[in-house]
Length: 521
Image 1: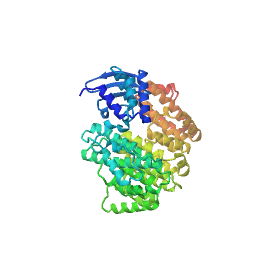
Image 2: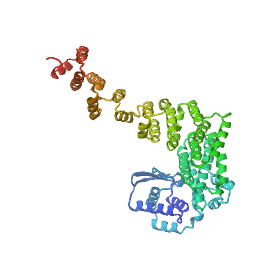
Image 3: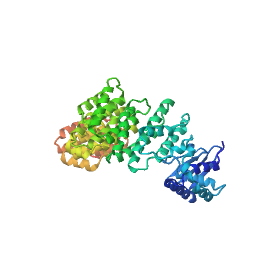
Image 4: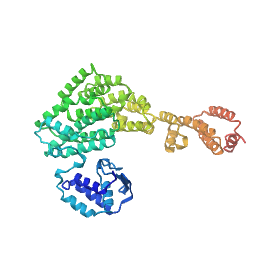
């Protein structure tokens, strides 16, 4: 069907609610971009209208008759100001933008919100706010009905459709403020269950962004719930989540990591009572007699940590192997916030042993992400004061990614010998090493610098050009000074004699040695 700007306008009229403050702001921002003539390189094809919109950064926009298929390169999900700017720019060629906006303002869209993105006659009912007395079953029915009729065969628009379904649920959350985060948590949890089953049945492996989005929504709700006392009316809902969340560890899925993280969030932020955690530990212990899957083991380790069963948790971590490193950041963050720090050090010591093997299995980007995440949960300054050997062990396990941190640490600790060995390991050319640090070591223990100068001489000679030979002579003079300070001139004479013999065919190098008065002319 050819792209029709009037049809797109009708869909927007149905989708955007003039009584919704967010939708009002969206229209205003779209109009502003359009009126500032920030829409450019506009093209119309048989199936789409494309353009660029100059915002803080330029974005690319594509409009289709079906709003679910329209998209923008900005991070905003669903309809954004850039899509509206392109719509207004195109609509102005055949109609009045002012009249379109006036018509939109007249809409009684309390009955039409997101109608273009939904199917079924139950839409009106779905917009009715959820009641606080509805009970768990009614909430679950509401979530199931919201996803009914969704087209699961079109993977390319399915993710957008699922997010729209979730947003429509959030718009129908209870009116009482204290119930809103609980409803949001339930909506995210049940949406993940529904969409996970769709992905499994359709073999969809491209929904990571959707699952991450649901995790963010759940995390947002949990942070609100975790700082307020739960009213007694929540008991039924919390009981359901406690009993049902085993789904996250046992349900077949292509998104194991995301489901495990949801489980960790629930038990860390929401279910804090000791008796609840101990009962969950017993449940997982019983399950593990028949189910030794990775997710169940991770759940067991997590609950063991929360219960303070460190021997059990550390034993399972040892058995799990290097893959445990991926989950370690979450636990280290939790433990780093606990006092005293002895438990934290114990886990860091155990987990760090798996880092080298884990890094070997990951690509460069994932390695850097892991290292950054791992060290975000470690107070390196505090650890350097309280347990410097443990910190050095971690740095060594994570080399070469921790070279700069390790180098600075060793120098601060005045471990100059180890610092020199690290520079050799990294293979950094002497001319690129901080001159101030070299001078500091030269004042304290100049002999420690000998290996660096020996390496620099060998490297410079190997380049076999006049400039590199001059560098080699400069380094040889530094070496001679150190040998002289250390009263080791016999060793110097032997070293230089062997070097000249080894390089006897390099006449240019010997000439530079003569110019530098290392040997007689």
